Image (cartoon, rainbow, N blue to C red; front, top):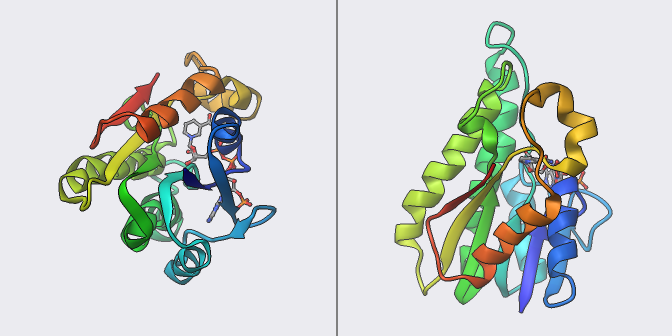
Length: 199
Ligand SMILES: NC(=O)c1ccc[n+]([C@@H]2O[C@H](COP(=O)([O-])OP(=O)(O)OC[C@H]3O[C@@H](n4cnc5c(N)ncnc54)[C@H](OP(=O)(O)O)[C@@H]3O)[C@@H](O)[C@H]2O)c1
């Protein structure tokens, strides 16, 4: 089974790779240091990635940057970072990748806890996360050829606690392994239209 993982060398992506690498043929994609280069903010770059990779059984996205900052300091341009990267970037992976997913394959996107349990300065990130959740719930109804579409919404990973802990005061970090299992559930289970909340 051929699985394309976008954002494979990130903190979250590397946990997913670790979980799946012994059982699946993984193709790692990101902007640098991966099997395939892609920038999800560019539809052209996404098209080129799929043309290069060809048919796959599953797509997992663990990529997507967001802007953090107060509403008072936020400009349309700063908010557009979250819109173009985490939200539209991941949705464009679905729109441009659908033809490359084999029958009965799966697509799994990533959102995050901040849409349900917000923190100060997190409105732009929460917007992108909520958009992913809503898109997945609705678009799953339209998926052709038995293709399933799910979303994983992790809280902060134990492995990221040093980096983002200041932002997530009072949140209990979860092991990367537990989050990675949600991607496995999406990949190998039968559900569609789900958001797996790993909080
Ligand atoms: N870590 C956590 O605790 C946590 C918790 C909840 C949700 N999340 C969400 O999970 C996602 C990944 O987070 P992370 O902590 O793993 O981040 P990370 O360590 O910075 O990794 C991001 C990954 O995505 C790739 N990437 C970034 N921008 C890209 C672009 N424009 N096009 C293609 N690839 C791109 C990066 O590789 P290149 O730099 O080579 O492109 C890298 O592989 C984010 O959406 C984040 O909000 C993370």
